[in-house]
Each structure stands twice: as structure tokens, then as C-alpha cells.
Image (tube, rainbow, N blue to C red; front, side, top):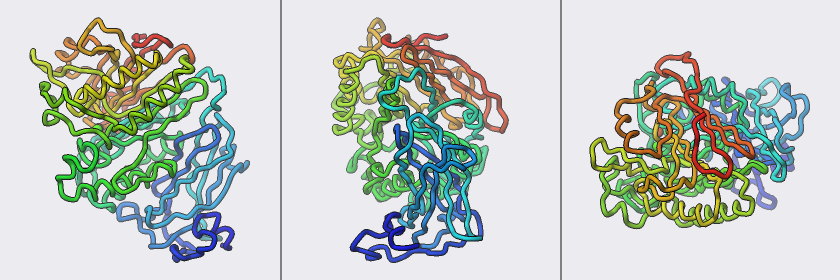
Length: 513
Ligand code: FE
Ligand code: CA
């Protein structure tokens, strides 16, 4: 390895050679495969995509790497056998980031499939990763007639098998969106599967937890097959945590350190761009992914900057605190989103997609006459929700589709201008996707939801099985297919499309097809 290569790999900076990074494992030798966690790609742009891997020969015990930098080579090819290499390079994997690498490959062609691979070591000690597949985003100006993607959430490891992911791998999609709860923080737990890792509080424990998830063969296959775009919800840190520090969370001793560890480990294991790298207890992950001429996917963060859940959290009757000032995204993100939506105003035929964690529409979940709301959802933040609804109306956007996860149920909603008025017009369509495993097998219609549905005419569909939502977007129509499996407590479940819904461009609200 000469100085020029080291410079290129970011190991040293010109004029400051080896000052702050004295350690390099120059001739790495591995007794076992260091690519145990597979490969991934993500955040596709028209000419660029992120490639990810992490060296972890002993994945459940801190990774098993020496406290030294290791050079990792990467290659991108335009063909599956990796014979036509279009880009290649070297990147340093360092112990500070658990020997994970995030390569932002540039100079690619838009809307193309590519294949990629990593390797480490030299000569007979050289070990290569599996080959992954990825796809760049369509060019901004391209007249795209169709884009297909899927979104998922809530994949509690011990709750079930990733059968839905196996079926997802057979889909013809160009992007996979994950709306949060990629991990659940508790353990050890003997569920349908054994989660061996203790409850995550330390950095090492979060890392071991991601390693446990990422070793799952279905999840590995999924990441090697599609570009990924993730946003975190609560369980990437801790159940139903809320907001800025200091707030409620800071009253728990050590929470700031825990959150810092959690976001660091999250970043280390996701194919994020380097701009998303966390600083202390914060990670700025809201961003827009453009889908050519068809639309914009605004990936939102409703967890890190929100005010505390009102009325003591949970499902409760309203209280004065709930009606008071609230924010779900924080001022900075809210202003940013306003700007993004305003930009969408210039071309109203494009879809404005809000990909975010929690149910946006109002749902009265009270089993009796009195209304009750789930305070962790947008229902706990009516002022903040009203501001976003007003913004959509004022901007004149009529192609807003909201995607949500978190709730472990499938729902379709018409998002009402005024949620308390049944006759109020729909201003957006909301598709809430169920969990991949969280909650276990589930049922088509859980009995406790029958009364809820009777009270909420804005609900167009409900189902409590596991699965994912496949979306097909064209200039004129949006289709969401609710794909479900009948069980996750044992492997091998078949998949079916439980329901499909259509949104006509320019007409908010979903119709069953
Ligand atoms: Fe969840
Ligand atoms: Ca959640």
C-alpha cells in the first residue's frame, strides 16, 4: 500500500501523514469469514448509490476485529458475473465505526441495475464478500412511466421468521423503504426465535444486536438484492422514547449516552450516506429521494425532535396538554419539509410521498362512547398535524401520499382536512403498513378492531397480519398492494395480496380495487 493509495482511502490527509491514525493492519489475515453480516446498498440517486458492509468475523461478540484500520476494496460492475467493472476503489474500515464502510459511489448511469462486491486481504489470504445488486434512481428529467417499490417496518427478531422478506425478495421492485423498528432493544428473549443479546444500552450491545439481525439469511438476501432507504423509529433506541434532550428521556440517568450509542450503531449498520453520520445523540436522517419525473419521497423523522407524548402516553381520552403546542418533527425539519413541499408546487402532477414512522390520520380507538387516541402517533400531536395539513392545503398539492409503519397493522385512510368532520374532504391518502414479524402471527381482523372500524369512517381497510406493502406508481395512478402471510411462528408461509387500493393522480383518497 503506497502513500497515494492511503491518501485515496482517506487513511491519511496530505501534510498530516499518520498523525491521528497510526494504526493500519497492513496484511490482514482472517481465520473465518469477515463478511458475516452480508452487504447492502442504499439511498440511490441518479448517478450515485451507497455501498455498505462491515467486517465482523465474530459478529455476536463485538465483531472480533483488531483495534486497527483495515483497507477494504470495492468494485461495481454492470453485469452480475462482475466482469464489466465500471467503478472500483479502496476504503478504510476503522474500529471507531466497528469496521463498517459506507462507500458513496458516483459516476453511475441513472435507472440501472449494478452489481457490487467487497474484498479484503491479499494473495491466498484474500476473502471476497457475496455479490450484491443495486439500482440507481431515475434521472430527474426522465419521463418515467412506472416505478415500483415496497415499504416495511417492525421486524422484531424473536417474534417470528422473516418469511415475508423471502417473498419480498421475489418482487420486481427498485427500492425498499424501511420505516423503523429495524431492531428491538430488549433481551435476551426466547421467543419464536432466540434473541441472545442482552438489552442494549452500551454501544457493544447495540452492535451485537444488529449483528444478530443482519446474520439472518432472509434479511441478508434482501439487502443484497435491493437498494434500501431507512429511517429509525423508537426501538432503534428504546421503546416510545420521545424527543430532544433534555426532555423526559433525560431524566433517566445515562439516556444521552445510550441514545448516542444507539444512533452510532444504527448508522454503522445501515447503507446511509456520510452526511447522515450521527453527532453525539442526534442523527439528521430526514432527506428527500427523487424518483425522476414521478415524484419525491420525503423520508421524515418523527422521533428525535418531537415533544413528549401528552396525557401520559398510551391510548387515552384527550387532555388539555394534547391540545396545546406540540411538534412532531422539530422546527428545523418542519421548515425544511415546508420548503420541499413548496418545491413540489411547481409540478403538481408529481407525487409527494411522505415516508414516515407513525399513523398520521386520526383514529378514535375508544372501545366505548368516549373517544381515545394513541398518544405516541400524530393523534397525540394535533397542533403539529394541523400545521402540516394546512401546509398541504395552502401549497395546493393534491398528490400527497403518506406512508407509515410502527403500528403492526395494515390500514388505509383518507386523510381528512378536518379529522373531526366526517364530511370534510380528503387532502391526502395514507397507507399504513403492518409489521414484518412484530406481534406474531396476527389475524385478518382482530375482534378488538371491529368497534374501532365502526367509529372511524375514514378507515378504508384494516388487517392485522404480517407482511409488506408493494406500491406501483405511474403518472396517473398509485396502487398499494397489501401483501400478507398467514403466520410467522414457523417458516414457509405462503404470501397473498390481501387487498389493493388505488389513488388517482390529483384526487386524494384511496379506492379499493
Ligand atoms: Fe414496532
Ligand atoms: Ca415503533
